[in-house]
Each structure stands twice: as structure tokens, then as C-alpha cells.
Length: 135
Image (cartoon, rainbow, N blue to C red; front, side, top):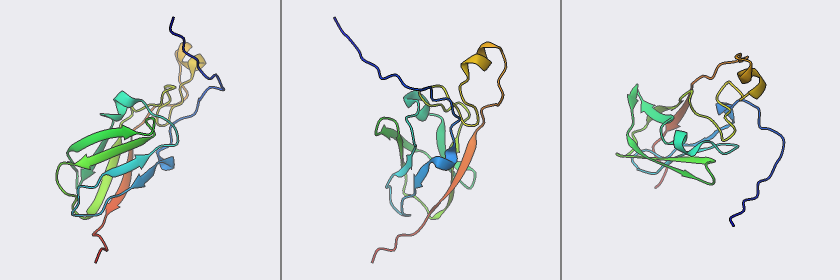
């Protein structure tokens, strides 16, 4: 028979905080990936569609991969990066494996009672793509 073992610990009942994410911007004129590292694993399926990148209000197209147990999001653009001020958009549907969202922890007691103390929200994080200093 198949057996699985799970580690049991205290509940992860804290809201996701995008200010804790580490954004590593690539250099301009490359297709190097944008890397975003999270302090804890996020939901794999939601990471495929809940994070997007834009420049001047236009969505940047590209491919998404997750790494390191869903603690790293990797975005490779379809075309080389232009130098500029970009934005990483995180939708309010994004959650970790415990159901916590941005601005709203997953609260079983509050949810069961039909009331939540806070609402999930989306977030926008700016980052800069600069020309490479390579010589």
C-alpha cells in the first residue's frame, strides 16, 4: 500500500506580503528571465496566471515557469526587454498552499462564520530594466 507522511506544524495564517518578494530584473536588449522569489511556496496553478508584467500599460507576453518548490517565478519575454519602468501585477486570486492571499490570511473560523476581517487585494510592484554595463 502507498503511504504518505506529512509534517504537521502551526498553521500558516498570515496574509501574503508582496513587499517580501525579491524581484531580479534582467538587463535590456536580452531575453533573460525576470525572477521573482517568494518567502514561501505559492499555488502552482495560480502562479501560471495570477502574475503578469506590463510596460507603459501594455502587457508583456512571454513564458512562465516556476522553480524551487513554487518559491520562484520565472518570466521569459517573447521579445527582448526594452529599457524602462515595468510593473509586476499580482492578482487578488494568488494564494499560497494554505489559502492565504494578498491582504487576507485564510481564517477558517472567520470563513465558517461567514465573515472575514480583511479582503484579498491585488498588488503592483515596480521594477526597472536597464541597459547592460557590459563592455
